[in-house]
Length: 489
Image (cartoon, rainbow, N blue to C red; front, side, top):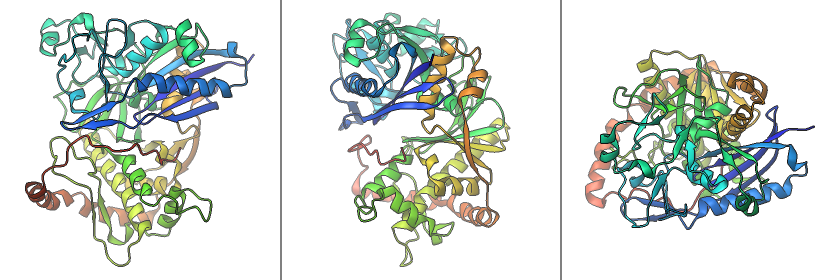
């Protein structure tokens, strides 16, 4: 008898659903976009209509139409979704207002009730769990930031004062469980809407970055995870909660393993988004050779020497909230440079930023690492992987399954139903390393020289952008435009 688990990986721009076997092989997959985000003045970024749910229905139906196995051999669903979204529900579980994206300013502010019929406040995972199972239960590992969460207990705080301060009555919040717990079973109504088998157990995961770390095989030890997503960051795993406000260069997140934590560095808000944005400017260039736009840009970037012949890219396509004047910039353009230089320089800029943020985190934690594990679409690109290894001067490993968040959700499902006794057992069986990129001495030396200049650029550009702010004003935060999915999927 074959045995499978189904993983839901809902991101900012798309749903990716995969059916894995218990050895971690991705056998059937469906990937569909969400609708473009709605944006408005005041930092508003919302998912239109009921798109988180209706798009998941469509993707589930398409996946189950592809599945040609025995439905009874699908054992469970691992439910993963994007972190920091805020959803406000009516008493019957319907949306009381559009789903608030993590890019919306309100998602990081104290909750304000703006509709009379608002009864519950939850995260994306809680909303989808309710839609699938009818239960108001969610993973504790989705709740960080402006939620009354006790990170040591993995549950809501006992302090009434915190609930009052955050304007969140206890009755508005769902019951919390740890990753690997059963949230409920697919209801008859949800089965009809999604095509998923009725009664299938739905298993709790964590926030999307933590699920990705689990799917990459990250454990407490000498590995540093580089997550190349819309938001790019680096992560380490540990067993201690370092409370918010006690650290400077990283923050503590829940891991996707009960009672473990992730230490997450600062990051680039529109990391791989910027890669996709640049590729979009040259759509169609591969038509003559039947290559994708990214394939053509990668081929051209491969001809460019490390350091992009002096071209540097500041990765501030979305500035941090405390420095809203910052902008993205190409610095050092001359007649030698073409789009291949610009593309490589964007990749190098991302890696330089990750090195900067990772170095600060490691120093503060007094930790050393001897290997990089790289996840996300960018991990599929050989040029990117090699320059990451060279810039960090560490071997960079990627895994066979590129959808680490999907595999992490599958691991949660497999452990949750008892197919594996421990997470270590599941990781050993389901996470398969692919190739590793070794630092090249000449490139390492060149990048070390360039990085010494790169890391000081903001002290020169900040005054210029501040002056430009007074002339032109600051662009409205949250304006993200159309979704960009020109990634290495």
